[in-house]
Length: 147
Length: 147
Image (cartoon, rainbow over the protein chains, first blue to last red):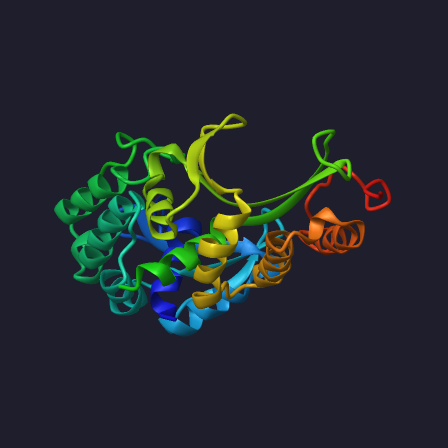
């Protein structure tokens, strides 16, 4: 069986491609843009998280403090661009979650190129982030995240 | 990409192999044993349910009245044994959900052979069903389901 296709199917159901925005004094523009690929699973059924970590060769598995689940997560932009995106470009998400993936990939690639460090690039990336997961909750409105 | 492996991965995350037991006057032993393979998904992300239905060549997709989801479900024992089980035997579930699948497959095959129509076979199948999904809720206890 093609394990990589299996893992993409699993991710289609259980995975999340997210970009969160947080106020940050450590960042020169005052905001941190944080892309994250994560997959959560009940603790007693975490085998597939281990397979994901092994196959993608990056990320961490840790308890999710909000409930009795484990979460596999990749936050490092280099790992996202060099390991996670190539997997999902080759074994693509087939549901409409693909739209979020495409936006996520664009955000990651722009950050990989350092575009978020300049005001114009930052603004474009924030626009992309606000097009994602429209049903999800955001801490800040688009108007609040300005420079 | 290997679509069939993808669908097994999706099912590992989102699918359910269940056997429910219901009192029934229509059944000669007084109980109906109902195996069901189902996968639920938010209405706006139902593409993979369609791919499952096409690939397995059986089952139905319908709204789940309890929430705003769609459910793909196969209940027909012939379809389960002739179409669903061969798929998951070839593209197996990799998480510990596999244990439920193995019990489910055994229940389906015994029903396919008509074993549930005799008291002894019925009892053995009910034993198998009670080993499944131990965290799930059951309407009846093992003691109640007796002949």
